[in-house]
Image (cartoon, rainbow, N blue to C red):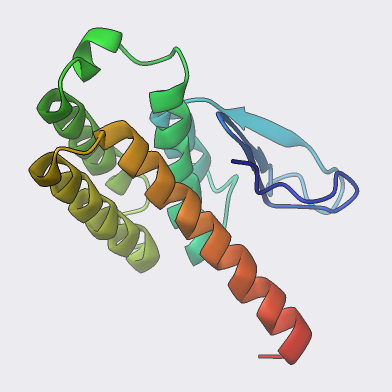
Length: 155
């Protein structure tokens, strides 16, 4: 799934499965530089150092950094060999991401929702990784739609 619109638009978050790039907001307005986020550790660092800012963006970067890790080669494959093992890995990584900005309400709300998706997937026999990634992508799509509506209709 690609939620990256035009290359000419300045976007804080660019997601083209399985790649996540974020605009390094520490360099604004002097430079528009993107950082590759390939793991939850990368996402944690970007959030903690304020390379990404804004409540919705923090939550989405956290969610998609783990999605990138799950889809890429940076995770230990043996940790995902069963649905329950994948769920435990995801929940542990989400708990780690929560420590990146302990006061971020949107981050904790996203983590709560993503954990519920994972638990539901385990209970229903769904593929946990696919369910997680789809939920993270849906969060980005909803945020983009909200921002487009605000731009079109006003706050």
